[in-house]
Length: 294
Image (cartoon, rainbow, N blue to C red; front, side, top):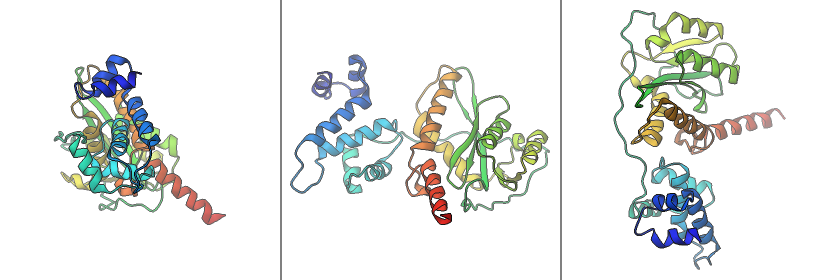
């Protein structure tokens, strides 16, 4: 009955507001709409009606919290077995005002004005290792809250672009490295790439890398393209999830970041990986290796 009220008043007030008043989840409403549309007789051509397709699009938009634009929504529809042309998805989303979060510029956070030793750039922008745990990349970003900046460090495996370690604690980069190592236990010789910020150049961090048998690699001065995958990660996080949000506390921001990291690793479609998630990409690779040795 509540869903009927939402349908009745959706032209007068935002659906999110109606759902809040009726104590109904937005994703639950769109899932109801999607099932309702599926139960209706199909069009003679076998194509989804605009109403049914729109219900699917809105459900995806809610599930990913507004992160996807029409290209990613189209890929998600295809992944769910809904065959539809990309132009049609684009037209529907534009007509109904469904779009990804807006973009904005972000502050450069690298502190490279120091006299600490800097490692050689071992990657030379080759971001495509042939297997997991051969090359990791790391960076730091800042997130604004009413309590001050929240600092976030992440470590990603460049093979699958999976976030294998992260930290929002005081000793950012060392904690993120430690988490990544305990989760993955890579062999010796792994290349750990970062910018030349003081946190990565510090003696304590370099000693930690050495203790894990890793080789340090650093971007050239002032060249963000040398660490493009992690820069892309920050863009996805901030544009897709954080843009336009205000956090009263650092705890609120941390909870949002943790939720997004789980979504990114397990579910977010990645264009570099053929539009599957980092976890699925790595699982497929391991399955292929197992078949080779069987």
